[in-house]
Length: 298
Image (tube, rainbow, N blue to C red; front, side, top):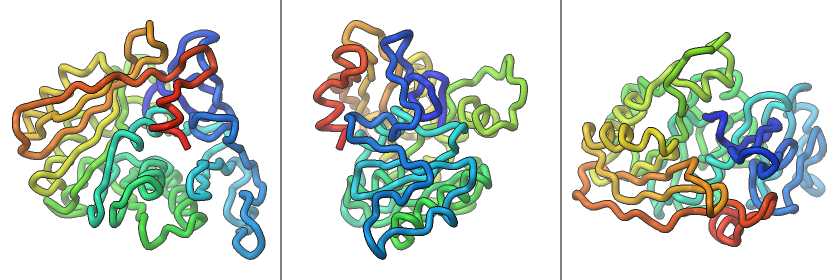
């Protein structure tokens, strides 16, 4: 999952500057509320025979985070790159209708397929991830939540998605891709954090090209990215006949500039885009707005 500016669970700051940021270290993915729980090697709050032996499910450098949805949990690295606010917002912006099949490109720990399974009526959710170690964690999270029949995690390269799955094979595609296209200063481009944040293994065009290939006619693409690349995003989408239909800007505070953008595009859709009311994350330092609870929270 991308971005120095994105909220995450490894002590980063949800993209909010200075003391206005809320440190989410040990919390559950930047989700609103004090209800979130961090379960480091505990029993995941599952009673009786429903509990799994976490000693077998978790590595020494891993933790279990409570997603506060359907009793679901997710396995993440204690000190590694974790999913954050951008993934939570995307899972609230995207939608899968009854019977639809969904693909998440660059799924990381599988957070978006798991959240969409909980929130929508989609039939099946697939996550594609290139990093083998993270794929293993995602597989274990799926098993832990008993979602083997509804969520699949596939080890593979985004650039080969259409070869792996076939053309026109999904109704919905989601992606929270790397935001940074400048590799300057990267000391080790092979590190998981670098791969998640920078366009090391795939570019925006790779994501859009493969999305257009695997989407069925009329299928929908949901993307979270950075506003500074908005002109490029729209240009690349239209190059591959993915017409932007909805857009939402995300602001940390009402008087701050947007630091995320949510976009829905349709394969071969008509030329008309609705710019929706923006999302305001915080109403005061450390205090989420009501929308974050009602639309994106739990």
